[in-house]
Image (cartoon, rainbow, N blue to C red; front, side, top):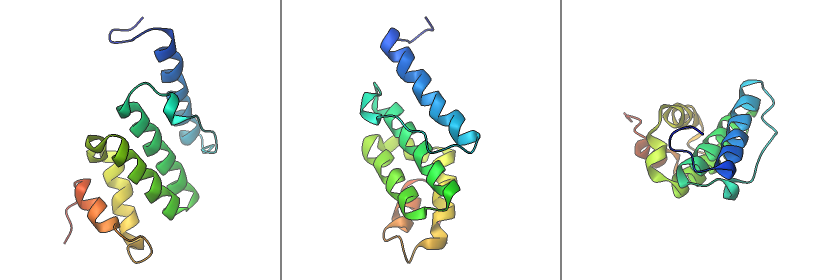
Length: 113
């Protein structure tokens, strides 16, 4: 077992989380798992970030934004990651359709003009 692991369940859930990331990278982002099954808030937030990336890839920007908000609600510190910042920058193009996206982008560390 790797350092910091907490046993079989953590390993299985970690594999499922990485599986979602792989499906995203392979343009097969429709595959999902139950985020509540993930053992930590950070992993749940990572799940929601991957879901947001999938929705962004599909051009579903409202769903992308909602997934990012779920990530923030789950683990607010996780929204300062580069992937979240990049998504937030892209969502700024739709700020009229996505109320609050400018504030979210600022919380994610995007420098707004």
